[in-house]
Length: 131
Length: 411
Image 1: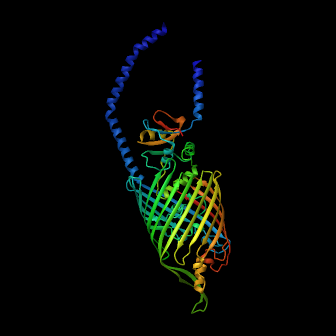
Image 2: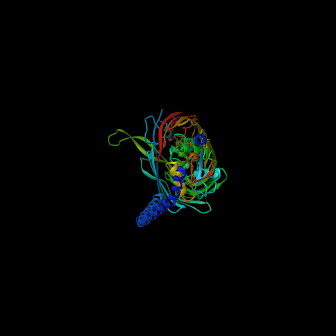
Image 3: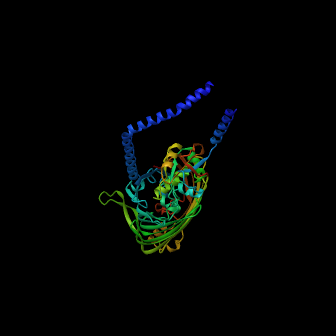
């Protein structure tokens, strides 16, 4: 009976995690950031000491993140960065290729801020914003 | 009973097993210490080397952009350099940019451009050093873009623009796009928006006319959906404006008809004061797009004073952004150029101008970093002027349609 319950609970969990949303992460001990600071950070504005990391272009979590945080579509974001680059104002954040790479980069780089799907969370990183 | 016995045996065996495993682990560790140490050190050296080379390559950034365009028109009025024969070079260009971070706050930027309209000669459009002070004030010096219009800073980066080209009526009203000098800017960061204040000064030169004492400022506020902008600039113009004309003649030896190219001085600018005022606004919520600008350029004396403006509306449907634009240009001081002789008639014909244009186009984001654009622009309403085209001073044409297919790439 207990086994059955735990199976049900587990499958419920996985159902929930399948619907999980993107979360911003930092190394454990990083303080939370506001939505507007996150937007500025990932658009290269302001004077924050945080170091943003992006997932590769074409990644669904990346699109979801920008949809919620910077409110820019993939094409808009590309046009935005080409504007910044060719006016000498800044360069897009460095990219990593997977949620696992994002977690290890964020955990090991000082002041790093990244984002992953909630389902990929573990205790190597801390959620600093749920957009 | 049997179970308990096994359990007891296991319990008794446990410390033994643990101690065995501890001992063996210790022994293993002791044996491997030196090799492990070396491996660890090697790993550390590798990481350090990686960080060092990474920091050097991080300091250099190379980027580029390219546009290829097919342009043709239904007549030879010369609108935007077009003609009835297909042209592939007029709006084709290639740009390379190198950015070198001298320190965290200081960088050198160089953008080299090759344009079809300049026979692919290599020119530096940007070449400057910028420094950001701790308080956030940014200082730049070198060769810079004259920041008069909303798209001035990335005039040649077609990929970053929604349309095939910024409307000629507005962007063609000032004949120079770069200057040598400096600017100082500061960004006021609000909760959800940014206000950028920029002041600039320097000098430039265009077709033998000195553009001196350039001084100006602009304000740009944006929350990444709305953008509002205002600009004022002034300068002193000094030099003689000449026009090359083709004079039909006869070869003195053979007697065959030939044509002679001659440069005719038309207008002398003797430290005339020029002023420029512009306002602009744009809205882009990711789906709906609207951009508008209005400008006024005034020059003392007989050189054209003009008003111009445009509005562009677009709508994104996945990778497709259809757009429409209406634009106008009109000289405001035609009464400064009275016609009393052949010379004054030529001046009036060259410096008076008015026109309205209507464009319909489509931007297709075909690939990640490639946009293809289709555009048809119809210009009309020239009044009793050439429409503002030097090649139409005889007013042969009173309208023109230009067709453009263009691709824009960033890399």
